[in-house]
Length: 83
Image (cartoon, rainbow, N blue to C red):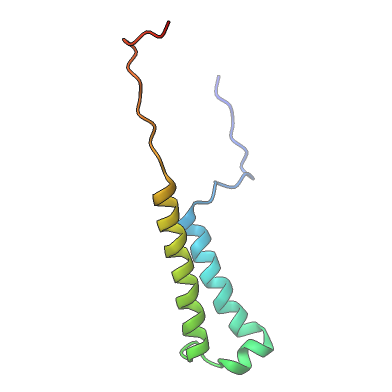
């Protein structure tokens, strides 16, 4: 018997989608928020570029921290019986 999947359920997001959404959020914030638009009218101005660079640095730092903290537990052999 096949179970129908819910057509309205969203697929799980992965880290690539989250980081892309953050960069899009920054770009749209600089376009829509008047205070940000005043300091960077185009997306080639230094405040916009520095913000994008800072967010990229945060994502790189989080990736490095996750890689360092990731530990693989050694798999115990099934032939070793524990009393």
